[in-house]
Image 1 (spheres, one colour):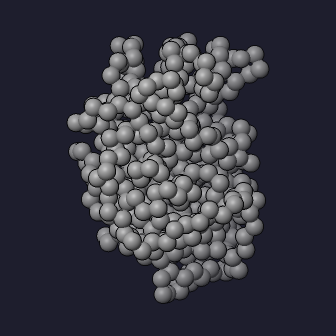
Image 2: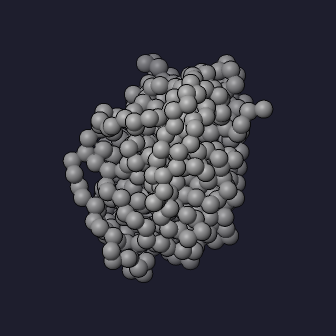
Image 3: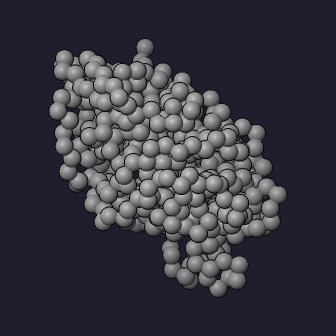
Length: 474
């Protein structure tokens, strides 16, 4: 997918203070993953499951093996509306809404960033005349609610390893667009457009900052814009690939002089490559997992209210293996009491308490799975999900889904081992899992209790990333 193919150097780096020598102890028995030449996930061949039920409600059952047991269940139709990014993996990708019941296509709209209540979708297009148009669409019927056009070539920023479009505050009131960041060393100005979504027709506020700045995140209330400042190679404090987090106070209309630092630390220069990201429900904390082949991986927590950071070191086993390090995923339970960091290739699971000030609660070694030879870029959004009841963690692995018991953090089996999935989400009531497979051009529904594929969603195409699973419709 084109968003996942952006150069990793553009992704956020973490505080050098995160990478102290106080490394988390690493279990000695997990095998090292190899570096086989990758093939494209979208074109890699795979065997078709022998008896997968279709959305027509046919009576054929699918049997999967979990642990030592095999369970068979009768197929049932999917019953929830799905929002999924579809397309060939490029600028023409769209947001597809799939009908509850049979999962057939209900509507397609341009890809964009949804409002927190999923009632409005903000899309951005740029014309050849270097004019940017921002449109607010009604997600219930696809109609245009309001729009504005202004000079320049701005776009929605990429987040979560480039797997999603972002730029909207958690309150839904502030939308941030960024101008394409040039990697030319002589670039001297970075530009951003700030829009009030309640008055979208009004001209945006344009920010021009000297230097190379890149969007990171906007605070929930829309008052603080966090930016990555790329440091020039001539800067004694940072060479190639080093930069620091800065804050632009949108209320005061000024760039804060002091960079964001880890609580209790003074170091400002950051180092490491960012991957998957999750944001707390209130938008106060933004958690990103980073890899660093020198010091090992870690989670960087950014408190958008206090403008401070928390850095948590992860197990350093095989930290030099860049391909294996790309498989770190993040998932938070529904209550927000636990954040899970998991790497199925390295066989590592870490539970973080994100309440108050983040800290590591538990670390566990699980059965490692082979390194995916088809995955050509970092994993991002929805590659791990926690069941709504908080009892199980499901992780996209090389083949199928790895299941982890959250009570023990130990392996609880594997689902659909003959499938290659892109993303997975749990239904709001914990009864079903929805998983997309670009390899097979399908979305499947798995029953959480029987742990089998019970149906294929009716939509056939190129599902890239599952973005949302709605509750059952009345």
